[in-house]
Length: 521
Image (cartoon, rainbow, N blue to C red):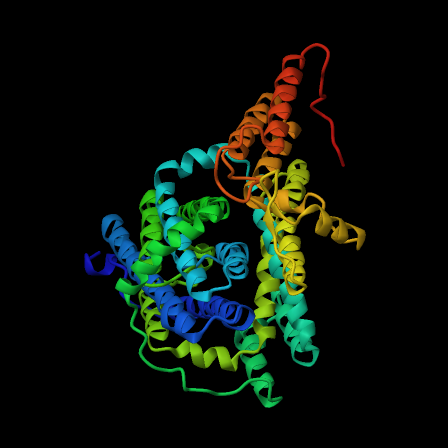
């Protein structure tokens, strides 16, 4: 066979389906970012369309081009023409955590969209650095962090933030929302297909846009189309300003990026299993560097390797879809085409994606973990609820003129009088500020300890609790800001758990026994 025939072509017929998958799903993520920043938070177009969207587009364009190059290089190395490029895009779980766990609290705390954007850019840049670091420490962390703890925490974020927002948006305009929801779900959960194997989700998105337009819910507006070239000089200044503001939110940014590089690792391993032997470390470096470049250009959402490589390979996609998708998304962001799309797409279309992603995240957590670890998943899902409650309660209290303050226990809450008023009204508030601070890490800690309890490894529970003590001492969890708090009640609580766990572990063969065949359900 000639050398030419053993090289994957730059474009082939199967790449058309790959482009549809990559571009469509990324567009939906773009619309979610736009609807949150412009619609919910009211950020000006100067920030959203002039900085955030072009910055995201640059990152996606670079990753798409680089993954096509990696595929071509792999084809040349192995002498195969059936290589499929890694699918890349906006990290959907990380996107929601950044939007609702970092950007939204920053927005309400600072009451300044420009400063909030600066902090979000800094958070994205730091996240890219953490993601690159995953090239060194990712395999080590993956071996030591129970999957139930990691996926359970992310599932909790998806359930409380994404699923609820999706349901509320659907019923906010039921005449539009419910039909779109039904058509999408018969395909997503029922597996139905229209003629020519057209997925109902595509029909729901395209048909939903046309349906909403016919009802007068949306409009055609080309006024925002233009030329939005990223300005790294301007963004770098905001990046520097944002570092000082974003420090308290590192307890959210770092864990989600740890999840992000593990997600990349898992998906590259899935590609390897499908027959394309990509280098995990190189891919994590690429994701991190593209994310940092995106931040320098104004982006606020990290990149990752997506699921779906096996499906793309089965449909005979090569490397062209990655190259073309990157160029198309890059051009769409730079020329302002998403301003047109945001006016055309009703909230219900994004809501369907909210629900779909949330259900997939929750289902994945249970599907990819042993049945005996289900309790750990459920426990890990709970702390993100505190983040949601805190945002809702403080938002309403803020309208009444009540503002939070740093309390004696280090949390950000209300004084005793206001706290008692909230409790007397029957509102769930006790303990919420403490769990809200570092909710993702807390979920991972609780889920990890639960897994080790189930596995009869109490000494590892003790080690995990000691980690919790250190994190609480330095304000990474249960504290409104970083510092040194060795006498924190939260830190002391973890220390007591560690002592008890080690004592019980010492008595495991004599006075404290746990049968291996015990089942809690």
